[in-house]
Length: 95
Image 1 (cartoon, rainbow, N blue to C red):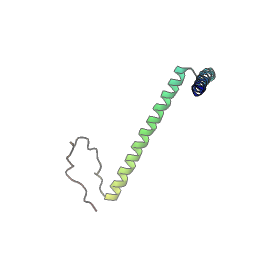
Image 2: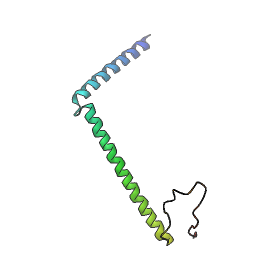
Image 3: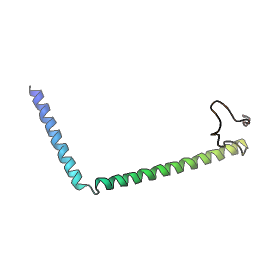
Image 4: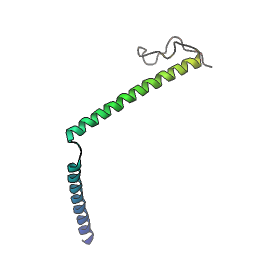
């Protein structure tokens, strides 16, 4: 029974510590909940936009690098209209 009593005291102490920590954090927070959400959403949107821009720039650089390596200018075009399993009519010869 001694072990159970110690576990209960530990659990109660943890719950009290959590409640005190939450109260202090809410009193010390520099923004309200809605302001924090708006700031967070703005930051997430900014990061997504920067990631999309970086992806587009990297794809363009890789596309240009491939075109220079193969000596062709019409390769790696948008092939979204091609159905699954089919290939474009002309592929560059492999080296």
